[in-house]
Length: 608
Ligand code: ADP
Ligand code: MG
Image (cartoon, rainbow, N blue to C red):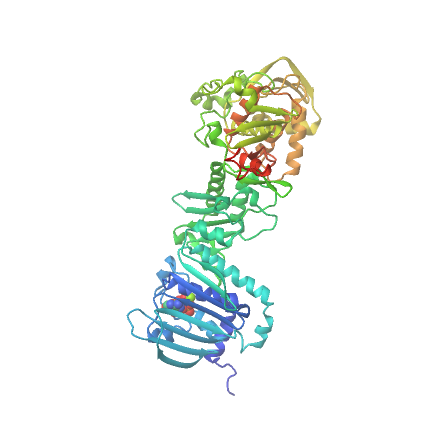
């Protein structure tokens, strides 16, 4: 009896295999664009009709193909990009499987026109459903044009499976945007039903991304750059006000290839910390360049998923670099009138008015506060902390009290700092006025000081004249024991007694008079609340937040001009001055320009 196993005819094999590479019109756009880029083109034109269902055409001015290659390129596993197994280790092109053209040609009507610079005339190849229909010499510009008509014309089931035009077109736009972002030095034009949708000249990445994405102002993005022996990172992240609740699309490019990578997305989001509300997503475009041996791009046929051999390292580099970039960019909210509504947007930092640049600030992080509501950190740190702080003490220099700036005219102080309803500080700066929330600002200052102390900085303690003894409920007692080491670093001096008794011998220097007795219980209560509410913050962050909130001046506290000045100087010496540890803004800027516009003075300034 004859066998039942049969070899499938080649066109059918291709049709089946095509399912993997060509899922929808957007896959065709992607494969053709990648081929054009691999061919070294610097000008690429894309034409789409009916969401790509009736036509996708890509025209490039790349290297072109010989007559022989123009036919060969449609054969499965025909590629010019890798020749040996070792080449797989170091792929520098977008394509390498030699499957795309064969797969596309299996399920559509394809016409290829191509010419190399050295050839007098070009070649035209027509192929339908995997069957060669004709090859002829033709006149053609240097480069390649591939048009793909009636996708899935011969596989009706798959054609029916396509989504609405709107959906398929959206997929095409996504593919186009990714490649256009990644290759900003290439000119791209995209036509839909004959009308230009995008006309992109060769340009810098920043201009390209502002053209393609929201926010659309180059000044709304912050540059990120980092280089380590393992990886080079560069690109842009949007300023915090542009973060969105919807996910949007994070753009990662690994060695020039678009990828998705959720864990790395989170590294970026977490770098914003309190600058953005929880569960919101700032857009970004970031490029990673690393030795191809550290990345496996071959995980998935459409090659959008990658694996890194040292993901934790990568995570740390990304988070640190983005965090630093945001800190250096000093993303301050600026009040702007839109119609009748006051909204915030980011604006240029007011740093020059204070003479405190991002890192050029001469102020020590734990500098002294003037007398008054803001207590000095002057007491020597406690006996109890000697052990843990010994190492730090050796290198720590004694900190000088904050000297008033020489250029500062005390007579002008009253005019420059104004306390509004004992709640906000108004400060005149060259470009207008800053409105500072005194509690939020002080919270930010104390929060960073506390974090610094927790990381081994120098704690400052005020010894209590009358030690305060408490008996704690069991769970608070356990919690206190757990936090004892960190509390000590913050300047608390505890002495353990019998049972659940604990004596408080010293408290952080900034604790306000009269609060010494209750501070510990209040701190524990707040800590528990933050730990509960914000699972993602570490125990140290929660502790620092609790302490900062506990000790900060309140709305309603009267501040002297020198206290206001000191607070602002400390605020601008912070890493992240523009938001309190809970993510609310500390500063709003109202520019003269804006005021002038509101008062109708724009254009009349000469006459004024
Ligand atoms: P791959 O890109 O994986 O090599 P493809 O099926 O996409 O596989 O293309 C097969 C080959 O055809 C490529 O390796 C390349 O040599 C050639 N080719 C395809 N498109 C172009 C183009 N636009 N310009 C020049 N050569 C091309
Ligand atoms: Mg290809």
